[in-house]
Amino acid sequence: MIDILEVNSKPVVAAHRGYKAAYPENTLLAFKKALELGIEMLELDLHLTKDNEVVIIHDETLERTTNGTGKIGEYTLEELRQLDAGLWFAKEFSGLRIPTLKEFCELIKPYQKLLLNVEIKPAENAVEVVDEAFVILKEYGLISRCVFTSFDAKIIAYLHDTYNQKTQGFIADSMFNYDAGEQGTYSKMWSIAIPMNKLTPEIVKKYKNMSLLVWCFCPDTEEQAKYALECGVTLMTCNNPMPAMQLIHNSTFPL
Image 1 (cartoon, rainbow, N blue to C red):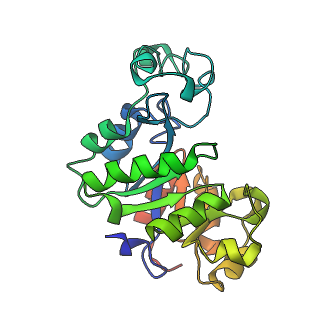
Image 2: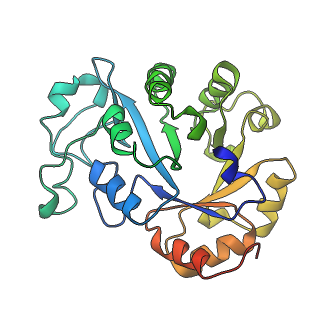
């Protein structure tokens, strides 16, 4: 299933935290709306609750995307369910909740070809997040459709060495715990994502020569998406997937 992401494949568009540009990020609604666009991959972020439930939310703390305060790990799942995860974005989304990974897996059951980019956020319990998430994703038969992402070099190594999983990392100056040396960390990556402000044809060539798939984030306009494709990336993670999807649909590849 994951072969769609190999170097010679048609470029793939991933929805960053769901359809983030139009809906509250990392909610089931944002993921559902991205799926309705015909997206090929969903990107999502994981954290653990106080009672070791895997939930989908970007920040370690609650303030930005909910009406709660404090750290995710200070609350049980039942307590987190009382929070509003949509009102911060717009009034019409009031009542949305922080989803669990299990709820997400139930949502995507009908989408048998959907790929997942599962991000493990840097945290003291990041290894535990990996272990708990792996159990759930395996239970739903999704492991073969996952790429696991982290800004933490130790987590990239853990995913590679312990679970033999395909990983996506970032350039050296974006990584945490980068103590294994540049080549050591890159050797445990399957792909690498470049931010738009650092994306050039030269940097794409550099990492392709290291046998890495080169992706980028977040080209949200037609101009940005066109530039990314001209640079040679094979996957674009977008807050607004529409421009990139339309560009690929109306073009012939490879460019």
